[in-house]
Structure formats: C-alpha cells, structure tokens
Length: 114
Ligand SMILES: [Zn+2]
Image (cartoon, rainbow, N blue to C red; front, side, top):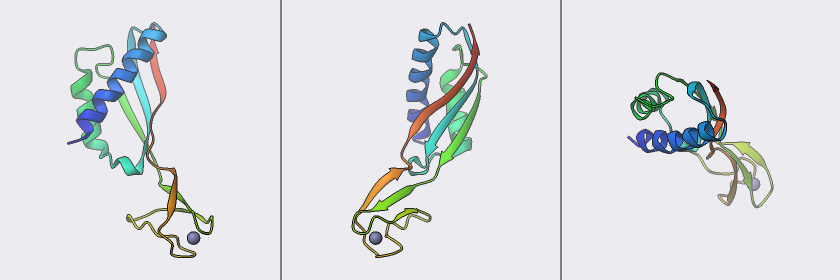
C-alpha cells in the first residue's frame, strides 16, 4: 500500500504549512493527485487517518482531486489525454511523448484555525 508513504509525505508538508501559518488545528485538506500516482481514494483516506492520528490534523477531512494524464507528442505536437494506460499518439502513433500533467501531488488547500 504505497498510499501510506504518500500520506506520510503529505503529513510532513502539512506540518510545515501549519508551522508557517501558526495553525493549531487542521480541519480539511484538499490535494491534487495526478492519475499516474495511482492513488486509491479509500486507501489514501485510511492512510491519512492513520498518519494524522494524535496530531493537529487528527480527524481532518481529506479531499482528493484526481488530475487526468495529459501528454504531448514529440513528433507531431498533438496534445491528448491518456486513458487505459495507452501511451501512443492518436494522430501519428508515435510513442515519443512528453508528460504535460498527471504526476502531480500538490496540497491545493488547507482549512484550519490558528
Ligand atoms: Zn503524434
């Protein structure tokens, strides 16, 4: 379950943000997770609950917004979304692709109090 290590890094980020903003309590966290990260939302929520237990983020609600995978073809510059893990340009069938989005893991928003 790689969600646990992701939740661990997420918690480190949260602690830093809380320190910078003097937050005493975190109620809600929204993250942007690229589809490439293959995060299973229920597993991620469980892992998040586990790593935040006893901390200032205990009981916080985690919202996950999944970012679709987008690629640009290096040969013909076509931009397209990737579904079902097929990494081939739909217009020229080249496999030389450049990732535009889909591997991010970003804390988008935090709600808490100081
Ligand atoms: Zn192409």
